[in-house]
Amino acid sequence: MVKEVLTYLVNDKSGIYMDCTFGAGGHSQEIMKNLEENGKLIGVDRDPDVKNKIPVSLRNDERFSLVKDRFSNIQYHAKNASIDGILVDLGISSTQLDNLERGFSFQFQGPLDMRMDQSEGMSAEQWINTASRKEIEKVLWELGEERASRKIAKIICEKRVKQPIASTEELVDIVLSCVPRRGKKHPATNTFRAIRMQVNEEMEELNSVLESASYLLRVGGRLAIISFHSIEDRVVKRFIQGKDRIASSVSFKTIGGKHVKPSREEEKVNPRSRSAILRVAEKVA
Ligand SMILES: C[S@@+](CC[C@H](N)C(=O)[O-])C[C@H]1O[C@@H](n2cnc3c(N)ncnc32)[C@H](O)[C@@H]1O
Image (cartoon, rainbow, N blue to C red):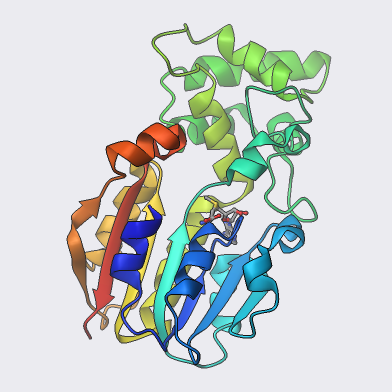
């Protein structure tokens, strides 16, 4: 939703912007095209690999800088400036998903890793082989909305006693033994998403970046969040409405309607965008 993000996010062409999920730099490139000479863009990504894939147009542009960090730390990179716009495009990139070594995809055989930054935290393999049955059940149910969470957790615990679960293929086989194939959606979709969200602490990261944005943005500054499923979108929606927010003196108004969905054309070109929801809000006080 590049066009929509630009329409709503860039309000001042000489402002300071943060792209908290730089990825392949698709959104950043377009934001930069819209900024004037004194505008600035700070890209952030926790994946160390992204710095090797910065698009050529950004590499030598002094208005742009990239930091490798979690977006829960953006306050350390804003350099005390009032920010004009903050973009968060949640989840993982196609590059990460399609790299079988990273273990994000149920479609490829690979090591069960799923960390966005492989130098920190527990891999999916470590988590799945050490978490209690109750914890696995809870994560699959709460983050994956997986109806067979109990059954899957039970089989995981039975299998790992004999031999640790180490590959994406083993996890897919476990899920397939518990969840029947129905429709186009792969039965392992929810389980993989839940475990990825758990090992990357994605809900904690989201809550934290929203709180930071509420005080880093100037009044009139805008926040654009693209989420991919209802658990994240609910958090974003409630935050904009002022519910569940620590910074209670700050308020936002919604921009561009309640939420924005990708156009039919975008869905055709990029089927992964189908479930994307963009919410934009402007800080009013
Ligand atoms: C959906 S992709 C973003 C794609 C990007 N908008 C583009 O146009 O190429 C999400 C990116 O955000 C990064 N990411 C996800 N959670 C993060 C976090 N908590 N902190 C920093 N980066 C994060 C991922 O590593 C990934 O590169």
